[in-house]
Image 1 (cartoon, one colour):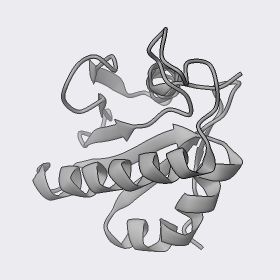
Image 2 (image 1 turned 180 degrees about the horizontal axis):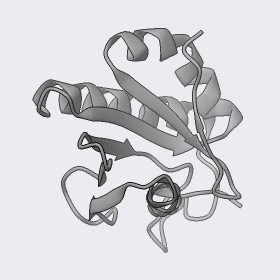
Image 3 (image 1 turned 135 degrees about the vertical axis):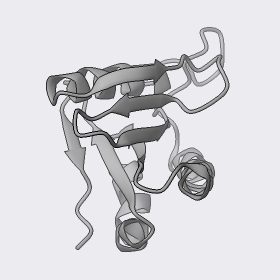
Image 4 (image 1 turned 30 degrees about the horizontal axis):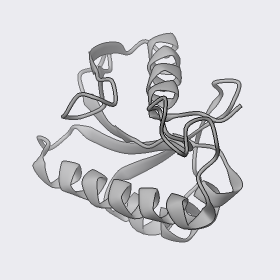
Length: 139
């Protein structure tokens, strides 16, 4: 099973709720804005930029097919830029993350920048096919 962006958002939302967060915003791929905003009981908000591993649009050439390595690179590049921009615009004290499917290609492109992401106070979150959630280590 290949996760599209909507699957990543739903799985992460479910996980965050199980961790005590309340979800303030959960967008569909057709909507513009921050994909997911969750509030921790202690107060900080988590703003998430999500990317999928396949197209969520029925009828597209990539629907249901995993993105190629070069397409994943494109998703990571654009997603990381959007996440850094989010980091620059959210209030101090809020958290920021980029969530993607847990695949070989996403790990390949995220692992080398994990330490830099950590320095920018950005979490990198991997979502598995069984909706398991893992924060990418910063090494």
